[in-house]
Image (cartoon, rainbow, N blue to C red):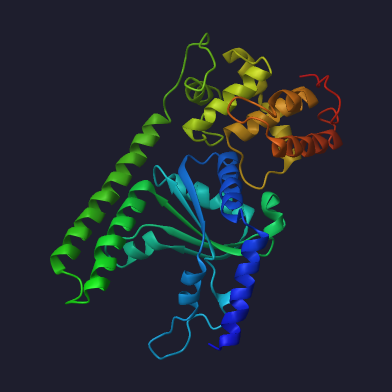
Length: 348
Protein backbone atom coordinates (compact mmCIF):
# COMPACT_ATOMS: atom_id res chain seq x y z
CA UNK A 1 0.00 0.00 0.00
CA UNK A 2 1.34 3.41 -0.90
CA UNK A 3 1.97 5.97 1.81
CA UNK A 4 -0.43 8.28 -0.03
CA UNK A 5 -3.30 5.75 0.18
CA UNK A 6 -2.75 5.28 3.90
CA UNK A 7 -2.46 9.04 4.43
CA UNK A 8 -5.77 9.61 2.63
CA UNK A 9 -7.41 6.98 4.82
CA UNK A 10 -5.94 8.67 7.90
CA UNK A 11 -7.25 12.07 6.81
CA UNK A 12 -10.72 10.59 6.30
CA UNK A 13 -10.63 8.91 9.72
CA UNK A 14 -9.51 11.97 11.67
CA UNK A 15 -11.98 14.23 9.86
CA UNK A 16 -14.75 11.75 10.69
CA UNK A 17 -13.79 11.80 14.38
CA UNK A 18 -13.80 15.60 14.43
CA UNK A 19 -17.17 15.79 12.68
CA UNK A 20 -18.78 13.03 14.76
CA UNK A 21 -17.30 13.03 18.29
CA UNK A 22 -20.33 11.17 19.67
CA UNK A 23 -20.61 8.52 16.94
CA UNK A 24 -20.39 5.61 19.37
CA UNK A 25 -23.20 6.99 21.53
CA UNK A 26 -25.32 7.90 18.48
CA UNK A 27 -25.17 4.34 17.14
CA UNK A 28 -25.75 2.80 20.56
CA UNK A 29 -28.87 4.87 21.27
CA UNK A 30 -30.30 4.42 17.76
CA UNK A 31 -29.87 0.65 17.77
CA UNK A 32 -31.18 0.28 21.31
CA UNK A 33 -34.33 2.13 20.25
CA UNK A 34 -34.72 -0.01 17.13
CA UNK A 35 -34.41 -3.22 19.16
CA UNK A 36 -36.83 -1.93 21.78
CA UNK A 37 -39.38 -0.95 19.12
CA UNK A 38 -38.97 -4.40 17.58
CA UNK A 39 -39.64 -6.10 20.91
CA UNK A 40 -36.19 -7.66 21.19
CA UNK A 41 -35.25 -8.80 24.69
CA UNK A 42 -31.56 -7.93 24.76
CA UNK A 43 -28.89 -7.64 27.42
CA UNK A 44 -26.99 -4.65 26.07
CA UNK A 45 -25.73 -2.81 23.01
CA UNK A 46 -22.03 -1.92 23.04
CA UNK A 47 -20.44 0.34 20.44
CA UNK A 48 -16.95 1.57 19.74
CA UNK A 49 -15.08 3.60 17.15
CA UNK A 50 -11.82 1.85 16.29
CA UNK A 51 -8.64 3.67 17.27
CA UNK A 52 -6.44 4.93 14.43
CA UNK A 53 -3.51 2.74 15.51
CA UNK A 54 -5.68 -0.39 15.14
CA UNK A 55 -7.12 0.74 11.81
CA UNK A 56 -3.68 1.54 10.44
CA UNK A 57 -2.34 -1.88 11.47
CA UNK A 58 -5.35 -3.57 9.87
CA UNK A 59 -4.92 -1.60 6.63
CA UNK A 60 -1.36 -2.92 6.35
CA UNK A 61 -2.26 -6.61 6.74
CA UNK A 62 -1.20 -8.94 3.93
CA UNK A 63 -2.09 -12.42 2.74
CA UNK A 64 0.44 -15.25 2.60
CA UNK A 65 1.27 -14.33 -1.01
CA UNK A 66 2.13 -10.76 0.00
CA UNK A 67 -0.97 -9.04 -1.44
CA UNK A 68 -2.90 -6.58 0.70
CA UNK A 69 -6.08 -7.84 2.32
CA UNK A 70 -7.52 -4.30 2.27
CA UNK A 71 -6.03 -2.58 -0.82
CA UNK A 72 -8.47 0.35 -0.52
CA UNK A 73 -8.93 0.71 3.26
CA UNK A 74 -11.80 3.18 3.21
CA UNK A 75 -13.77 0.84 0.94
CA UNK A 76 -12.61 -2.53 2.28
CA UNK A 77 -12.47 -2.05 6.07
CA UNK A 78 -15.97 -2.18 7.53
CA UNK A 79 -15.47 -2.12 11.29
CA UNK A 80 -14.36 1.44 11.91
CA UNK A 81 -17.61 1.52 13.87
CA UNK A 82 -18.39 -1.75 15.61
CA UNK A 83 -21.60 -2.70 17.40
CA UNK A 84 -22.12 -5.72 19.62
CA UNK A 85 -25.58 -6.86 20.69
CA UNK A 86 -25.92 -9.49 23.40
CA UNK A 87 -29.20 -11.30 24.05
CA UNK A 88 -30.21 -13.48 26.97
CA UNK A 89 -31.15 -16.47 24.83
CA UNK A 90 -30.60 -17.52 21.24
CA UNK A 91 -34.26 -17.33 20.14
CA UNK A 92 -33.96 -13.52 20.30
CA UNK A 93 -31.13 -13.47 17.75
CA UNK A 94 -33.35 -13.99 14.65
CA UNK A 95 -35.67 -11.24 15.91
CA UNK A 96 -32.75 -8.85 16.36
CA UNK A 97 -31.41 -9.72 12.91
CA UNK A 98 -34.80 -9.05 11.31
CA UNK A 99 -34.98 -5.61 12.96
CA UNK A 100 -31.48 -4.72 11.74
CA UNK A 101 -32.11 -6.06 8.23
CA UNK A 102 -35.29 -3.99 7.98
CA UNK A 103 -33.54 -0.85 9.24
CA UNK A 104 -30.29 -0.83 7.24
CA UNK A 105 -28.91 -2.01 3.90
CA UNK A 106 -27.27 -5.42 4.27
CA UNK A 107 -23.81 -5.68 2.74
CA UNK A 108 -22.95 -9.08 4.23
CA UNK A 109 -24.40 -11.58 6.71
CA UNK A 110 -22.41 -14.45 8.24
CA UNK A 111 -23.72 -16.97 10.77
CA UNK A 112 -20.58 -18.05 12.64
CA UNK A 113 -22.56 -20.51 14.77
CA UNK A 114 -23.90 -22.24 11.65
CA UNK A 115 -20.41 -22.43 10.19
CA UNK A 116 -19.21 -24.12 13.37
CA UNK A 117 -22.07 -26.63 13.29
CA UNK A 118 -21.40 -27.46 9.64
CA UNK A 119 -17.77 -28.16 10.46
CA UNK A 120 -18.93 -30.58 13.15
CA UNK A 121 -17.54 -28.72 16.13
CA UNK A 122 -18.29 -26.37 18.98
CA UNK A 123 -16.97 -22.91 19.41
CA UNK A 124 -17.47 -19.34 18.32
CA UNK A 125 -21.18 -18.59 18.22
CA UNK A 126 -22.08 -15.21 16.76
CA UNK A 127 -23.85 -13.64 13.81
CA UNK A 128 -21.91 -10.96 11.94
CA UNK A 129 -23.54 -8.30 9.78
CA UNK A 130 -22.00 -5.64 7.59
CA UNK A 131 -24.63 -2.89 7.32
CA UNK A 132 -24.94 0.47 5.60
CA UNK A 133 -26.87 3.44 6.95
CA UNK A 134 -29.56 4.28 4.38
CA UNK A 135 -32.67 6.46 4.03
CA UNK A 136 -34.70 4.25 6.37
CA UNK A 137 -32.25 4.76 9.26
CA UNK A 138 -34.10 7.80 10.58
CA UNK A 139 -32.00 8.49 13.69
CA UNK A 140 -28.65 8.15 11.89
CA UNK A 141 -29.16 10.29 8.79
CA UNK A 142 -25.97 12.29 9.43
CA UNK A 143 -24.11 8.99 8.89
CA UNK A 144 -25.92 8.06 5.69
CA UNK A 145 -23.71 5.87 3.47
CA UNK A 146 -21.48 4.77 6.35
CA UNK A 147 -20.76 1.04 6.55
CA UNK A 148 -20.37 -0.58 9.98
CA UNK A 149 -20.13 -4.02 11.57
CA UNK A 150 -22.56 -5.66 13.98
CA UNK A 151 -22.07 -8.81 16.05
CA UNK A 152 -25.11 -10.47 17.62
CA UNK A 153 -24.62 -13.23 20.19
CA UNK A 154 -25.97 -14.50 23.50
CA UNK A 155 -24.33 -13.46 26.76
CA UNK A 156 -22.96 -16.98 27.14
CA UNK A 157 -21.51 -16.99 23.62
CA UNK A 158 -19.95 -13.61 24.34
CA UNK A 159 -18.39 -14.77 27.61
CA UNK A 160 -16.94 -17.85 25.91
CA UNK A 161 -15.55 -15.86 22.97
CA UNK A 162 -13.91 -13.25 25.20
CA UNK A 163 -12.38 -15.85 27.51
CA UNK A 164 -11.10 -17.94 24.61
CA UNK A 165 -9.66 -14.93 22.80
CA UNK A 166 -7.75 -13.87 25.89
CA UNK A 167 -6.46 -17.27 26.98
CA UNK A 168 -6.16 -19.30 23.81
CA UNK A 169 -5.06 -16.74 21.22
CA UNK A 170 -3.50 -13.75 22.96
CA UNK A 171 -1.38 -15.88 25.25
CA UNK A 172 -0.36 -18.35 22.54
CA UNK A 173 0.69 -15.42 20.32
CA UNK A 174 2.73 -14.00 23.17
CA UNK A 175 4.51 -17.26 23.89
CA UNK A 176 5.09 -18.27 20.22
CA UNK A 177 6.12 -21.70 21.52
CA UNK A 178 4.60 -24.91 20.27
CA UNK A 179 1.25 -23.49 19.16
CA UNK A 180 -1.96 -24.26 21.08
CA UNK A 181 -1.68 -26.77 23.92
CA UNK A 182 -3.88 -29.76 22.89
CA UNK A 183 -5.18 -30.10 26.45
CA UNK A 184 -6.23 -26.43 26.51
CA UNK A 185 -7.89 -26.88 23.12
CA UNK A 186 -9.79 -29.94 24.36
CA UNK A 187 -10.99 -28.15 27.49
CA UNK A 188 -12.20 -25.15 25.47
CA UNK A 189 -14.13 -27.50 23.18
CA UNK A 190 -15.80 -29.14 26.19
CA UNK A 191 -16.67 -25.71 27.62
CA UNK A 192 -18.17 -24.64 24.29
CA UNK A 193 -20.37 -27.74 24.27
CA UNK A 194 -21.62 -26.97 27.77
CA UNK A 195 -22.37 -23.37 26.79
CA UNK A 196 -24.36 -24.54 23.75
CA UNK A 197 -26.36 -26.84 26.03
CA UNK A 198 -26.92 -24.01 28.53
CA UNK A 199 -28.18 -21.73 25.73
CA UNK A 200 -30.67 -24.42 24.72
CA UNK A 201 -31.90 -24.68 28.31
CA UNK A 202 -32.37 -20.90 28.51
CA UNK A 203 -34.40 -21.06 25.28
CA UNK A 204 -36.67 -23.69 26.82
CA UNK A 205 -37.05 -21.68 30.03
CA UNK A 206 -37.98 -18.58 28.00
CA UNK A 207 -40.57 -20.61 26.07
CA UNK A 208 -42.11 -21.87 29.31
CA UNK A 209 -42.10 -18.36 30.77
CA UNK A 210 -44.01 -17.06 27.74
CA UNK A 211 -46.93 -19.35 28.66
CA UNK A 212 -47.44 -17.58 32.00
CA UNK A 213 -50.78 -15.82 32.26
CA UNK A 214 -52.31 -13.35 34.68
CA UNK A 215 -55.97 -14.07 35.32
CA UNK A 216 -56.78 -11.53 38.04
CA UNK A 217 -58.64 -8.65 36.37
CA UNK A 218 -58.15 -6.43 39.44
CA UNK A 219 -54.36 -6.51 39.28
CA UNK A 220 -52.65 -3.11 39.27
CA UNK A 221 -50.76 -2.21 36.09
CA UNK A 222 -47.11 -1.90 37.06
CA UNK A 223 -43.77 -2.69 35.48
CA UNK A 224 -43.84 -5.98 37.38
CA UNK A 225 -47.38 -7.06 36.37
CA UNK A 226 -47.49 -5.75 32.79
CA UNK A 227 -45.58 -8.71 31.23
CA UNK A 228 -48.17 -11.16 32.54
CA UNK A 229 -51.15 -8.91 31.78
CA UNK A 230 -50.02 -8.39 28.19
CA UNK A 231 -49.40 -12.12 27.79
CA UNK A 232 -53.05 -12.64 28.76
CA UNK A 233 -54.39 -9.88 26.49
CA UNK A 234 -52.32 -10.26 23.31
CA UNK A 235 -50.28 -13.43 23.78
CA UNK A 236 -47.13 -13.52 21.68
CA UNK A 237 -48.47 -11.41 18.81
CA UNK A 238 -46.09 -8.54 19.60
CA UNK A 239 -42.57 -9.24 20.90
CA UNK A 240 -41.85 -8.47 24.53
CA UNK A 241 -39.31 -5.77 25.40
CA UNK A 242 -36.47 -5.90 27.89
CA UNK A 243 -37.78 -6.15 31.44
CA UNK A 244 -36.30 -2.72 32.26
CA UNK A 245 -38.46 -1.07 29.59
CA UNK A 246 -41.74 -2.01 31.26
CA UNK A 247 -41.15 0.94 33.61
CA UNK A 248 -41.51 3.30 30.64
CA UNK A 249 -44.66 1.46 29.55
CA UNK A 250 -46.12 1.90 33.03
CA UNK A 251 -45.27 5.62 32.88
CA UNK A 252 -47.04 6.30 29.57
CA UNK A 253 -50.12 4.28 30.52
CA UNK A 254 -50.41 6.08 33.85
CA UNK A 255 -49.94 9.46 32.14
CA UNK A 256 -53.08 8.68 30.11
CA UNK A 257 -55.00 7.38 33.16
CA UNK A 258 -54.98 3.77 31.96
CA UNK A 259 -54.55 1.90 35.23
CA UNK A 260 -56.78 -1.19 34.98
CA UNK A 261 -56.72 -4.40 32.96
CA UNK A 262 -60.10 -3.54 31.46
CA UNK A 263 -58.87 -0.14 30.22
CA UNK A 264 -55.79 -1.75 28.71
CA UNK A 265 -57.93 -4.40 27.02
CA UNK A 266 -60.08 -1.67 25.46
CA UNK A 267 -56.97 0.13 24.23
CA UNK A 268 -55.68 -3.08 22.64
CA UNK A 269 -58.83 -3.76 20.65
CA UNK A 270 -58.18 -5.69 17.40
CA UNK A 271 -59.81 -3.08 15.15
CA UNK A 272 -57.51 -0.24 16.22
CA UNK A 273 -54.49 -2.52 16.04
CA UNK A 274 -55.27 -3.52 12.46
CA UNK A 275 -55.83 0.11 11.47
CA UNK A 276 -52.46 1.07 12.94
CA UNK A 277 -50.62 -1.77 11.24
CA UNK A 278 -52.08 -0.67 7.91
CA UNK A 279 -51.54 3.07 8.31
CA UNK A 280 -48.13 3.15 9.99
CA UNK A 281 -46.48 0.69 7.59
CA UNK A 282 -43.91 -0.35 10.18
CA UNK A 283 -40.48 -1.29 8.83
CA UNK A 284 -40.51 -4.33 11.10
CA UNK A 285 -43.08 -6.02 13.29
CA UNK A 286 -43.60 -3.67 16.26
CA UNK A 287 -43.01 -4.77 19.81
CA UNK A 288 -45.41 -4.33 22.71
CA UNK A 289 -44.17 -0.89 23.69
CA UNK A 290 -44.28 0.50 20.15
CA UNK A 291 -47.83 -0.72 19.44
CA UNK A 292 -49.18 0.52 22.80
CA UNK A 293 -47.42 3.88 22.48
CA UNK A 294 -48.95 4.34 19.02
CA UNK A 295 -52.39 3.23 20.18
CA UNK A 296 -52.20 5.85 22.93
CA UNK A 297 -51.16 8.44 20.34
CA UNK A 298 -54.10 7.48 18.13
CA UNK A 299 -56.53 7.69 21.03
CA UNK A 300 -55.29 10.80 22.84
CA UNK A 301 -53.45 12.71 20.11
CA UNK A 302 -51.51 15.81 21.17
CA UNK A 303 -52.40 15.19 24.81
CA UNK A 304 -50.40 11.96 24.69
CA UNK A 305 -47.37 13.82 23.34
CA UNK A 306 -47.60 16.53 25.99
CA UNK A 307 -48.00 14.08 28.87
CA UNK A 308 -45.29 11.59 27.90
CA UNK A 309 -42.34 13.50 26.40
CA UNK A 310 -40.95 13.69 29.93
CA UNK A 311 -41.47 10.65 32.16
CA UNK A 312 -39.73 9.34 35.24
CA UNK A 313 -37.91 6.75 33.13
CA UNK A 314 -37.17 9.06 30.16
CA UNK A 315 -37.07 12.73 31.23
CA UNK A 316 -37.16 15.62 28.74
CA UNK A 317 -36.95 13.54 25.56
CA UNK A 318 -36.97 16.13 22.74
CA UNK A 319 -36.44 13.50 20.07
CA UNK A 320 -39.51 11.62 21.27
CA UNK A 321 -41.62 14.77 20.83
CA UNK A 322 -40.46 15.11 17.20
CA UNK A 323 -41.09 11.44 16.48
CA UNK A 324 -44.56 11.42 18.01
CA UNK A 325 -45.52 14.62 16.20
CA UNK A 326 -44.47 13.07 12.88
CA UNK A 327 -46.47 9.92 13.62
CA UNK A 328 -49.53 11.94 14.62
CA UNK A 329 -49.31 13.82 11.32
CA UNK A 330 -49.35 10.49 9.47
CA UNK A 331 -52.38 9.38 11.48
CA UNK A 332 -54.14 12.66 10.79
CA UNK A 333 -53.50 12.29 7.05
CA UNK A 334 -55.13 8.85 7.26
CA UNK A 335 -58.06 10.38 9.20
CA UNK A 336 -57.59 8.14 12.25
CA UNK A 337 -56.47 10.88 14.67
CA UNK A 338 -56.58 14.63 15.20
CA UNK A 339 -53.73 16.69 13.75
CA UNK A 340 -50.91 17.87 16.08
CA UNK A 341 -51.83 20.86 18.18
CA UNK A 342 -55.32 19.61 19.10
CA UNK A 343 -55.23 18.11 22.60
CA UNK A 344 -58.83 16.95 22.59
CA UNK A 345 -57.97 13.44 21.35
CA UNK A 346 -60.22 11.30 19.19
CA UNK A 347 -63.15 9.09 19.90
CA UNK A 348 -62.54 5.41 20.63
